[in-house]
Image 1 (cartoon, protein in one colour):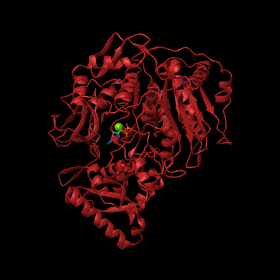
Image 2: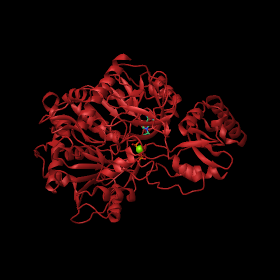
Image 3: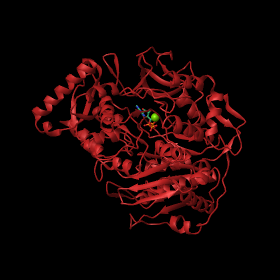
Image 4: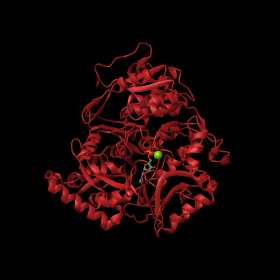
Length: 631
Ligand code: ATP
Ligand code: MG
């Protein structure tokens, strides 16, 4: 892999030269005067003095060459709707939305909180904000009123945009009612709320003078032409709160120019997505993956992006592959948690459709265990690329970079540091660099590359303290994840630094044990947590979902499977990692973004309060953990 190694080396040793070249991938209304300003570490300012606009790069720039090409394909298996918008049509809708917001007094620097389901109007509003220099803060539709209120109070929006409702698994979720509740709880509520009515909540109530109707406003601006607001590269484009898996969410602030360049470069080098091709990212617009790779990335690249409202198994587990076939998807991006769901279904669903157009499947969000990686790669017959990133970085930190060199994939590994990232594995105790095969903290030597967060919204001090304060003697960005690097230079992520179990002085990552449990052929997925143990300090405890649950119907069957799984762990990891017990459940508690709520499981196992559960996908999962623990 000399080609990629060289590419990466240059990105670190000649940062300004490397990124000046990448910056040519986007339009600059006024070119940058300096590529990098790093006079105030750890704050990095990229493409200083350059002026650009994300909406221009995503839409206007393509109108000449591809005005009639599809820009956005909307598919809802919830409502049965399917619609597409050409670049010209999308441009028009975005102008209408922009004019509508301007008529409500929204301008440059004003915040707009978007709390919307996966519908095209969400994309219109997001791109319209970018057009007029307003700062969007999209909040994932799964968050409860209190979580939304906390985000409102932090972002202090002038305007909120929502819909009457969303739909999940055929059940209506009343977005607007939740917005009302959050505004009641908020100290700094917005003056106006715009509602897109889908007719999903007929009992929706409105508040006079505050609530406005999207369709009515739109009708006033059918021929709107809203000029672009050119922004200096380092002005904020958006705020996005982290998932909150590990605590109080942080308002990740992103810039304009660095983000545009990082996305354009990643579309070319990582995703191999070219103009005229199609990308299908199965995430939600409320998550960073949705921002970068449902909306901005593919549009900046001149691709068609698929916006899918629905779940991967309705009407059946073949729906995604049908979309790939029908829309000739070239690049697909999903999450391990979704693949584990599909793994419980017949792989024949994958073979039923023509997947000839598909080049790669990318996955991110959680550790991708080896058996799941092997299963999906085999079922698809395509390269499946695990890549690792965070809300904070906006794009991949570790990835295979097939646009530069097609390096072999190792199962369970997100390959190598992406170009631009000066990645370090540092020992927790003294920040010294770890040896090959030694578990250490994944850290990034600043400056962070373009696209990464510029600060915590309204709180520079929290940015420095939280992310750069892990090591006393070294100012480096901590990811708060454990990793190792093997002799070939491949990285493996072993879980979060606060997910470590200390068994009789041996430190084990929950991920390592989970990997071992997953090696048993009848385990679909599992969660391992450490629980206090008077003898050993801590002991691992496993909660597992079986693929074939018939054996679990009898107590003997359960015991036998538990024993087998323990033997598998002994073989894979050694008896030191053997869980104290393995509880079988049919569902694991996860956030709506698919992250296992290990902290809550651990709290329950130790008889403590499970904490903030507003992002939980299905509360029944926690009930199962409770029941399993009490038997
Ligand atoms: P918070 O920071 O608020 O607690 P969060 O960390 O869950 O929330 P995200 O930014 O959505 O918020 O998630 C990033 C984390 O997800 C990473 O730090 C890592 O733990 C995990 N992750 C993402 N991709 C991968 C991957 N490919 N392999 C392993 N872990 C991954
Ligand atoms: Mg995090």
